[in-house]
Image 1 (cartoon, rainbow, N blue to C red):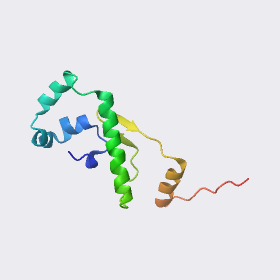
Image 2: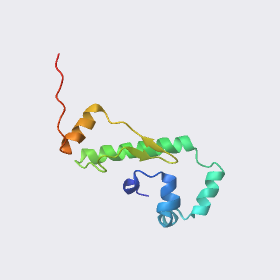
Image 3: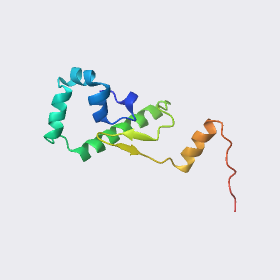
Image 4: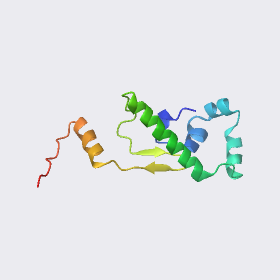
Length: 110
């Protein structure tokens, strides 16, 4: 399943609420089947969150390498079961601010 268009949503939300028909087509499992697997603890939640985060970072790096910045201004990723909010570095925040036409802060010299 392609997660690119639903970066802010958790994978569980994509499967159960946003694209259940795609999930069933790709896996042959219904949302009811998915919920059963979750209740049976087939998925290790922490490992799934880490795997989705690793995939999203790899995807971002690949797109950035080709000159594509997808989802500019994104402040969080949806992981498997929870969102991950991230903070921008000062340099990245200034870069985005400058691109948006905001005045640049004067640098301090000592």
